[in-house]
Length: 374
Image (cartoon, rainbow, N blue to C red; front, top):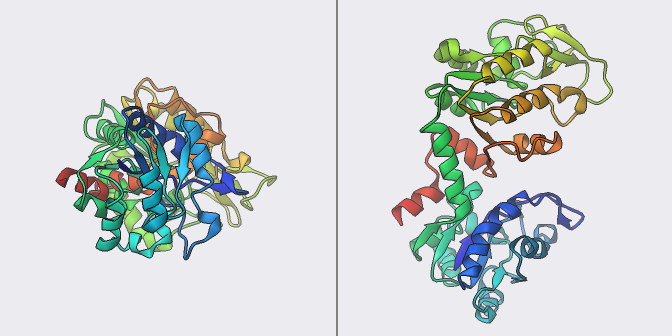
């Protein structure tokens, strides 16, 4: 059983710094091993230019084994003799982790010959890597041309959660979108506006909306190339768009700075908006109260610095306390809820990263499309 997982986790000092994706992958692998399959796991890690030792998957074998509850063997390559001999030694119910598929440039190129070599290691392909399914790579889509292809439990859970949040939402439906740049999320904003009852904007991207309105933004980050997009989104939104009415400002984006709360349309020169203010928090809470469905993507301030984390904490608390269905996506958002002690309080927390963002844009993901075709 050849299983594509996304074990692209942060590493520190040769070990796993955050194993949330390892934990998310475990149920599918446990299920297959319990049923007696020989489970061959492939994944990428980072963007290696060559066989960079720091991007080897070898340190993950022990962590994966701990989470699955079985020993995980390791193959020093994902194709060729190291892989085939390791697979040949594998017994029923055992697991094998292959070396980083991106050690071979053919993976990202979706090279057919490389995909065939990967496929030769198993007799069934399971794609459980939702987070990598927006990439048309050999280990994600290529192998499905040579093996019967199915979705794993994590993949099914991610798709079911997105379907519930986007396609069959309980009303009212509210989206909270933060982050730095409109340009990276304009597709998400447009797609959500056709579905939501209210769209709440925070983070540095709010500055671009402010400037598009002609408001002063001080020294805050503004995407001058996206002003027309901001105006287009606001026009499209009608009364659905909710922007901050006040902001927490500082002269520098660093800990220990003096803070001032300013009206959103009166940010002074040399000051930058780094969080939503108390009146905005109250406004956002009011919009979230009684929501049937909430989608949250992106912190509403610089949440990694405690002085600018109050808005994200308050909004996160309001969403976590909601009686409705709550969907959280985006790596920065997931990191924020972990750091702020809000983990475990949402209906679904996506591990999908960029794939979740593209799905929220309404794009079809190649790794999912190939499963439908298969």
